[in-house]
Amino acid sequence: LADYAILTGKSVGLSPKIALLCNFLSGLSVMLGCLIVNLSDVSNSAVGLLLAFGGGVYVYIAAVECMPRVHRLQLSPKNNGLCLLAFVVGTVIIGLILLDHEHCAAGGHAHGHGHGH
Image 1 (cartoon, rainbow, N blue to C red):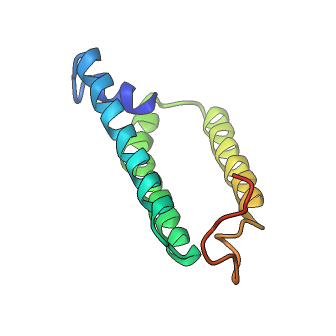
Image 2 (tube, rainbow, N blue to C red):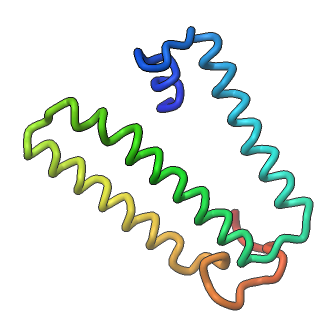
């Protein structure tokens, strides 16, 4: 949804049909990556590095694309604080979920089969 909003916004200005096509094609690249990782013998440490890289890309996009837009909204200090609190709570929840995840723990399974996701 955020990609679509950026692609159809004033700075990019794509038509809705072209923006949906671009969004669909970028989604296919995710599926291709999943197929490659699942069909090849990738170690848990490599999967962890790929997940860390992907997370870093999302943080970069949030910092470069989204934060300047939020800053231009000139929200009240209370709203800015609530947004920051929501971000921190979300980050802590994700961290707690991943705390015992096998890709994040030393000595996880060698191929990544047998976990619940």
